[in-house]
Image 1 (cartoon, rainbow, N blue to C red):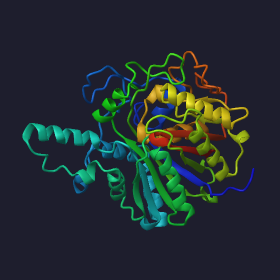
Image 2 (spheres, rainbow, N blue to C red):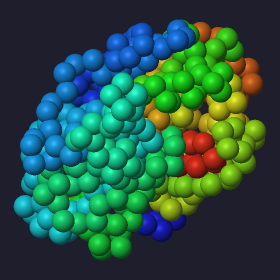
Image 3 (tube, helix red, strand yellow):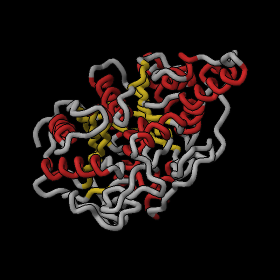
Length: 399
């Protein structure tokens, strides 16, 4: 092990709302059971068959003072904030460091598009947009970041990152850098994305959407499923006081710009992101116990990423992907799957690859189909690979 380039930060709290349920306990139960949580969409109708990872429980109301931000994305974020004591942990950080030393970085790709679609339907029907519709507070990439920032009364830096499916993994990297640069003592890093017609129809037009539950890394895969969710991680400067908490060691990022929507066929960008995460943390490939793959269940992505793993690791560790369970949560995927990886580190297991029946022989990495409950990983890489060659790999370590 060499000296790290960037100081690790402690993950002092994390929470997630997803198709698996309303908190991390529900997500952990679904992962251990390898239980698919995909079903036909309830939120809106589509002119083709598919299943989605939809949050079906009621979402909380936005308080009157912040009503301009009211949209499904903000409500998903608020729901996660209110689960399992996460809000209290965020408020503790504000009390300890001061509001000006706590920042917020949120990754998203759809933001409030679902509510914009409803507003445009209103326009077609009534000839005018709804009087209370605010594009800047609902649809723009920073809208839900601003909402959470104001909801918590934060005064540190606040911004959104939108780089397709790597958005919230990159938010984790940006948050770590704010602490390393002494701009902040704590940062709330988030990933939030909600279902909307635009993404479902867009991926369908690319002939990427499966009519049935997806099967990542499977020889008979038929495409992807879209999901939604909100994941929040509270990052703090690592100190002896939080030594019992897992560490975010580094986030490697790359931009191979191979193609607008297709990954590099040999996984060059994904391999570069993983290698950079290890270099920044001063760790070796031999140290990694598990790789949480992006594994969307598109043939090009699965094969590209598997080749990236095989090119980087002389002897790859166990790998798996969870999108057969949750669907692809797009801009939220990096943060959601960082939470999956934290659960693996803290609960002592390896997630399976829900839906995998016949491993694709063109994917040269050791993919596990069922969860392994006899393994306690200490160091995990979690990949998030986006359109346009935007790649990120998150390196997490157990306490």
